[in-house]
Image (cartoon, helix red, strand yellow):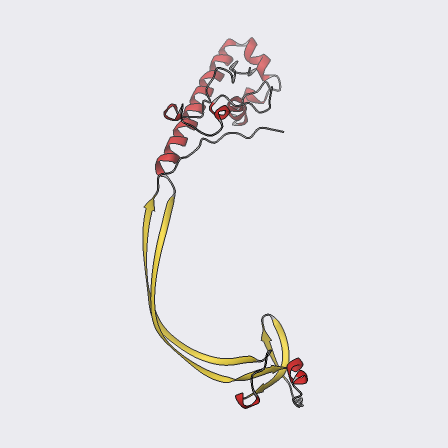
Length: 198
């Protein structure tokens, strides 16, 4: 039993679950009852969430449960705050479920024309040595895949062994058409719960 609201998870349904969802198969039936921060604990998750909101200055009192027992006015005020807080949680859950997720579907169609001009073949230094090619006195440095490579640019008459990099320049013209469709899908939304402390 909660030391603040005096409710039990044995006979009190989860106050955050809208009445429209009561009796619905949610997988874990225990979630449909009042939740507590710890197993066999004395603080329900709903009261703890309200207290953390700091709506009242006396919520910070470390002996709040004793203060509420001793002051009937504060006890009544606390229970009224709790009822309003839980009502808002239920309303928020229903509003979230009614909206559903938004999904964008995109279709794309492209047409174009591309011209490529071969600029030569870059032979890294390791490939020149492996293939027995003469090493030029002046080497060219190129950046490829984030690495600076030294080597020489040769034409296609020297062949294109593994490790040679083709160099080309291209000009591309085209147009694309994109159409979007927004749709909402109805899915089952489960109520959120304050996680239990370990």
